[in-house]
Image 1 (cartoon, helix red, strand yellow):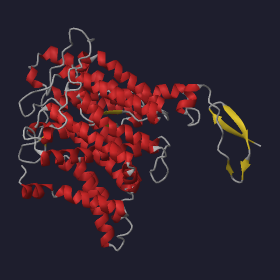
Image 2 (spheres, rainbow, N blue to C red):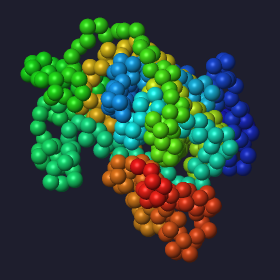
Image 3 (cartoon, one colour):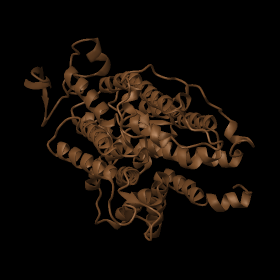
Length: 492
């Protein structure tokens, strides 16, 4: 007989078979352990609780940032209330993350997807009302759910080559980083060059200095393995911004968003004014974008939400030991279903589509292996419903530092790609660089898929990609040809 460790501090007698040991049988300690399979996955209750808190601390910035992204005016010039947006963001994140933990039993947290919120703000809302835009969110979420129920989404995820999956994660990281640098005023557009350092080739002003200090502080804390480094950095940067704003008596227009001023009371009742404010099919009418343009917008949202989540689920699942060497996760369908439903939940709440966040990797890195960690993260988001005034004082320049940090974290996937193999390296390169260069996640994924199949066909290996990759190639060719197609159909 061989003594086999079954969980920290305990062992069990099990027979050895050849050179390998029979997988241990773990007896759950309590109903909570049995439901979440905590001991079976080699974790403990304390580890899961800590992992859930760590994930929340890493992604709490979304409660601050999403209202800023969705702060633009719709086609009628209407802007959403900041307090209502904060409530909607926290509510949707809490509901979907708790569902992912309790039903999916994976350490994945959800919140408003930056790519989805960005697409709604930049591409949809200028041509629709806000209720119509949220209606498109509900529709795209339901479409993804249908893809999950049919089994097609899981097949597509498993059918995409692993190097491209890693490249997608890298590209999203670069995309998120450029958003942060631009919102902080560190990078500017509109000068003699497409991009420049500051507005005139140099940095100027207190806000960008505070962004730089916040960014460096977070990086130093991370290098010292301090848990919650991102949230600590944001909190510290906000305090410095408040002091500088008060001492220097800066005009409100100095800041990209509202000035960092302490509110009268840090606690307030949540404002659910946006909940249910949805016009499901209004965008398809003559008073919206029109049927064809609205369909194109939904297609874009589906692609953005689909591939953002795909890369994150595979990346974090692999890190947590829930995926095999080919990047496939057993029991993936539940997680995919909840992620797809997140689009509809976010639209109904008024927060834009919810998607799995790569910051879930911070909790996994802290030991989280089960859905209990996600349930804990979701409960913290629920608590944020009552602290929206505090969320409003964080300047966008400080919150933007978190985006750059997350981008740097996602770059670690580069070590998994064989850059000496041109059949893999070229599609991976195009995937990575076109996301930030075109300001579109979907464009990067499309370029990677098309170039991968084209290179395989050009080298006589056209069967190697498989039928699903060729179908995706055809879809993405249509995506790139949307402008001439719309012109042919008379759609503007």
